[in-house]
Every structure is written in structure tokens, then in C-alpha cells.
Amino acid sequence: MSAPTNRRRAIDKAITALLPMAPYADTEKIRGDAGAAHMKTLPASIAVWLAAIAHIRHAHTDYESLLAEGYDRDSARFFVVDQINDWLTRWRATRLLDPDDDA
Image (cartoon, rainbow, N blue to C red; front, side, top):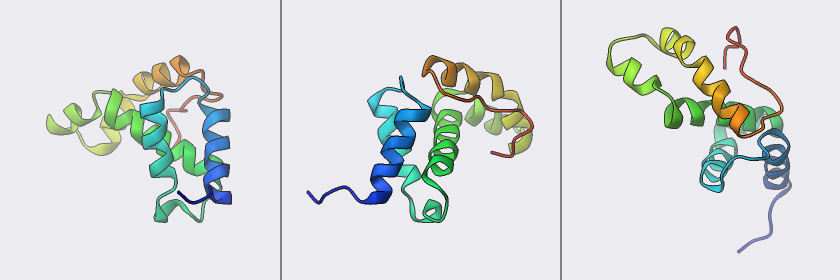
């Protein structure tokens, strides 16, 4: 196994800082998504935030069900903000999702 890259270390540090109580299974998915090629131009802290919000939205909320019921993406995202913030609070996140954010 190769040594962690600077980017990987920065992502690990951002996950620990942002989501100190997130379970390993969730942080592994977030870590992978934050390290994706399309995220590499972003600062690690922003990549982790975007990956965390997307992961929670898809894995821990009613987002997919709302889409299946015919809601558009923006409406579905609006309706799951509180659920996302509940998960962020459980994980002792250092910030919450603002409903006016475009994340």
C-alpha cells in the first residue's frame, strides 16, 4: 500500500474536523467521493463538505423517494434539509446545511 498523498491527508484532516463522530462506513464513502477526480481542484474542506452533504442526502434521507414520487431535484433537496442537519448534528459536525446553500 502506498503512502497517503498530501491530498488524502488533507481530506482525512477535513473529515476529522468537520465530522468528528461520523461512523467509519460513512466516512469511507465521503473520503472516496471527496477524493474523486472532479473534486481535486477544490480545497479539501470544501470537497469533504460537498461529499458529506451528497452522501447524507442519498444514503440517510427521503431524497431518493421524493425524486421517485416526481419531485424535482430542488424541491426534494429543500424537503430533506432538516434530515441532513439531523445527521450532521448526530455526527457533531462543525457546521449545518443552510437551506439557501446550493450544495
